[in-house]
Image 1 (cartoon, helix red, strand yellow):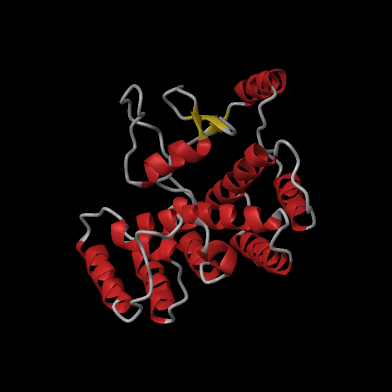
Image 2: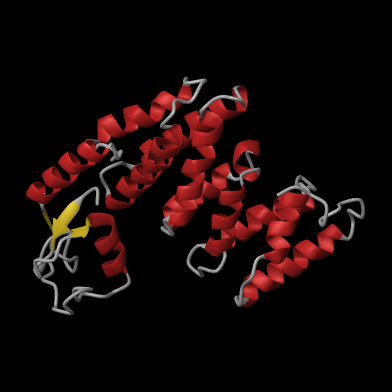
Length: 250
């Protein structure tokens, strides 16, 4: 729990989780079922009132330090600064595999919550993409697709659009998690349009490997639009008879 907050029910939640829960129109406490108090005036009218739980935050961070568990910083500038370290870092440290994904998620979560401006995330993605392309073996080559995957995972349309813009890059397109998250977004009627168009464009350009082709065709979905998209991609594969899906590496 990185940003513990208290709604009127008194039950603590991580801010990003309760905000996502309430964004679907639910205004009841997930635990007690009690009605949550909302703002009645101003720009936040209709939004659930949330109070930062500083005491719980301090306890969590103290215990995390004792247990040597990494929690990304709360301060926006510190968070972005830590993420930008991967722009120039060539050799990952021992904690890279745990720190980097946590930072990527925190950056996207804080953009969703409004602590980071969309333009700042867009600029960070652009810098990460440039660093990943100029140094394929550097840390940015792993940090960049992790950030793109989180853009898709958040399911917020304007942030998903940023992921779509980055999808054609080699580092993002070749990442299995990015592909999984992108296909998952394809089932969301509010976000899927541009995502599926971007993937289909890659198929039309034949800019794919067997791994991407297999991921698209084997994705299990009951969404009719996604099934139709899969059928179109399958038709495009007919023009690539040398692609061996069964023997390809994932």
